[in-house]
Image 1 (cartoon, helix red, strand yellow):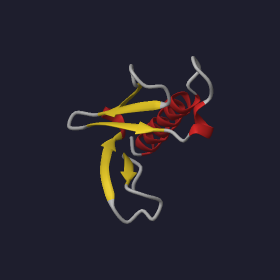
Image 2 (image 1 turned 30 degrees about the vertical axis):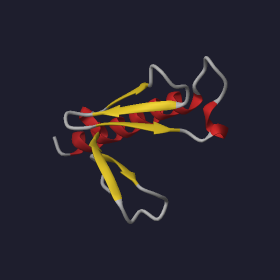
Image 3 (image 1 turned 90 degrees about the horizontal axis):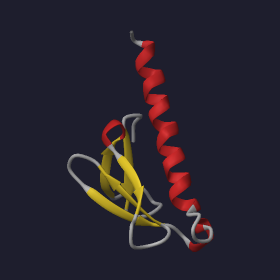
Image 4 (image 1 turned 90 degrees about the vertical axis):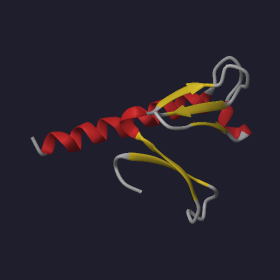
Length: 87
């Protein structure tokens, strides 16, 4: 793990990496067909991730996806902040 990628692991043991998304090139959107499913997409890969029922909220407000979008923005802001230190 580093400050340039969003890594998806198979489980919470963090032993098997499924994919690492480049933070600056990743788009996170709600799935158009399923509630509580986010779509992560970068230049090379697209992946759907389903939230646990407790984190979903109730339609039409998808808390899982909204929180994922906020988290991605937070991570990107930290990358920008770190980059500015070197200029």
